[in-house]
Amino acid sequence: MTNENLFGETIYSYSRAQAIEDGVLVDLNHVDSIRQHWKHPFACTSAVWGIIEEALLRPDQDSSGICHDISTMAKLAIRSARDAEQILFTVIITGKKHAMKLHIGPGDTAAAVLTLMLPYED
Image (cartoon, rainbow, N blue to C red; front, side, top):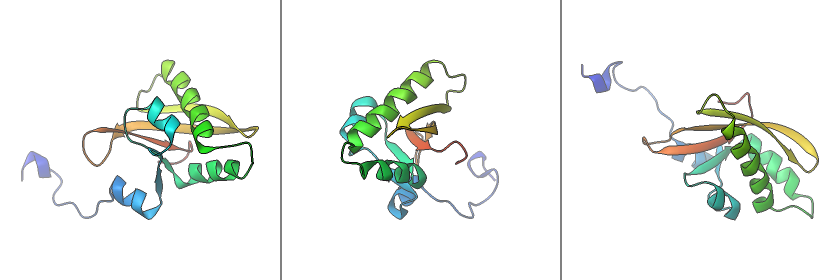
């Protein structure tokens, strides 16, 4: 047994790419404000996407503006965070406060990715 296979053969794995394909995660890299704020791949859970979709039903909202607000609050939280992997913050979307968590870590490879989720999601 090698160090690479310390625990034996992998029984099952579920990749980030599969999660995006299945709709468990929603790729937000197509949103202008996400590309402007973040240099790493950025996705959110389907629960967060549900909050964004609900806000988009209002005529005065667009995905870029909502994602800009989320990104701004996340970046403010990063500045004072004690844990660099998981950033907890609150954002107001269409007048409602939403607690969110931004996870920063490796994706399907060792390269960094960002995943936006609700605080109880992992």
